[in-house]
Image (cartoon, rainbow, N blue to C red):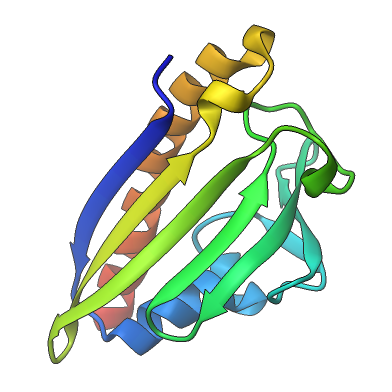
Length: 148
């Protein structure tokens, strides 16, 4: 069982702007979930909503401004809305490296699929693999639209 999803992209923006687009609730909703409710900060739990039917609790594991942001969630469309630390989950990590002024690399890693229940592990890996391709494209478009 594959345990990891990795993606990397270049964005024409500072590390600070990219970090804020990931780590601030009012900005993350512009490219990722439709809404964020709850306390979206390190050591707290929030709720991502995608459309009217899909919800996912997230626990913010780490927040190192302008460089690193990580959260845990239960992937795969399970609509899990409890404490994600009490069930098998995956860790989503964003590493941001500013390569030159106004140009940064974003590395996304999601790990933990092998630890999920067997009945959802493979489908969660596939769904999130495709989902990250789509969502990271939206993140890139968010900054492209801002530049215009």
